[in-house]
Amino acid sequence: MAKTDVLTLAILGILQDQPLHGYQIRKLLGAELGPFRALSYGSLYPCLRRMVDTGLIETAGEEPGAATPASSRRARIAYSLTEAGRTRLTEELASAGASSWDDDTFDVRFALFAHTDSATRLRILEGRRSRLSERLEEVSEGLKRMHERHDAYTAELQRHGLERVEREVEWLDQLIENERSAPGGDNPGPASAGH
Image (cartoon, one colour):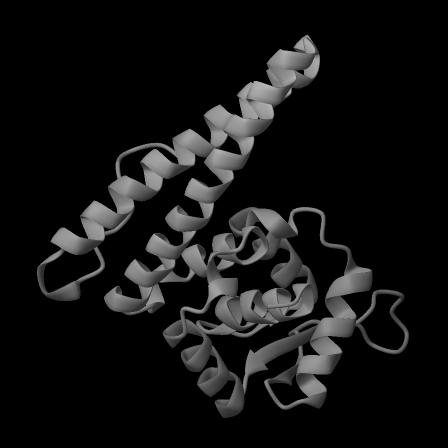
């Protein structure tokens, strides 16, 4: 899934409950979805325009009390999902391809887990764990090479990266266990283990 597609999915997810204007969308993306903390309006508004052009969202009119021609404040346009947008979001949430557990996409998919069925959540969690297990091997090998070259600072950076990945694998193990033990595929909620 390309970066724009991840942003599109995040916007669809945020708009599923209510219409929002651009400032509110940006604020929620930054507060709830880590990859978008530094999202600029220069990236957000072109994506919103593309989504309007493709029929995924529509403008819901101006916010009450919006600017009048005599006022210097710009009017805020609210955006809402169209039926096509709801369909696209449902399709995305039902899919669990390899891109759904990539670094750029996983946080967005995880944030939308409350709206994702249990089997799909489990496939995504297991895929993410598999991806991180591969990364653990790579980082461990890199750490061994750093020790052989006696580069203490790079080795320390590698060790820190290894610990971070190990913590995430432990967190995923707990989430997978919770998901598998949930009665009837109910959403078990987050694990008590820290991420």
